[in-house]
Length: 73
Image (tube, rainbow, N blue to C red; front, side, top):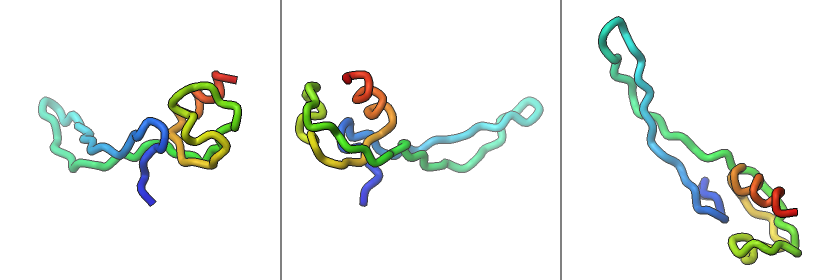
């Protein structure tokens, strides 16, 4: 199963952390960051176009989409 939001298609990204050591930055390895995905049941009576395809279904969605979905009610 891919770690991708079904609604907005947010996916993982590579990220670097820089640590300051006295006057220089210490090179640190890259790290993959994943979106915060949660299982959510999209209500059947949803009005927003982005959610219409998933009305009445249980999907993996990022927390940003879940927040927007709850504001709609």
